[in-house]
Image (tube, rainbow, N blue to C red; front, side, top):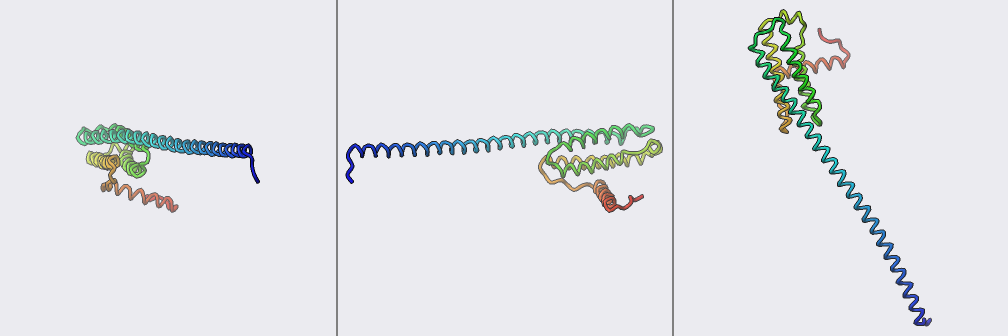
Length: 205
């Protein structure tokens, strides 16, 4: 079949039109794909930035809480050291109340630290030992001897020092040190009590 020059021009124009249309479609599709990929990338970057900001905020809050707890523990240690030589009040109660306030504040601050389960458990045990030592009745306080008073103070000091060592190690990023003798015995006794309770056994008298 022989085409005239006019028909060939028409076909060329039609072909050019199709090519242009296809090119425009491909270009639009590429632009849409590029925009989608860019949005996904931007969303990922934004999410990573938010996660990093949250991690920084948690770390900052954790450090502030840790420093607050250490401050309370050092204050408690200084106070207890003073109690060793201070004349014992008649009922030997005021120092117990003040020491309890220090350890309560320290424990509260530690419990606000994120991602700190191990050191929180250790401080909770040390606080438990200290509070157990501080908790005596008024009549018992009247009858307590100077020797017993000093023993109670030293036991509280042992728990406080254990707590300071554990929290300081955690904030440095070091492994927690082994608990001291008094705290280890307290932890073992607590574990025995918990085991008996879970087994439905009556508490030891």
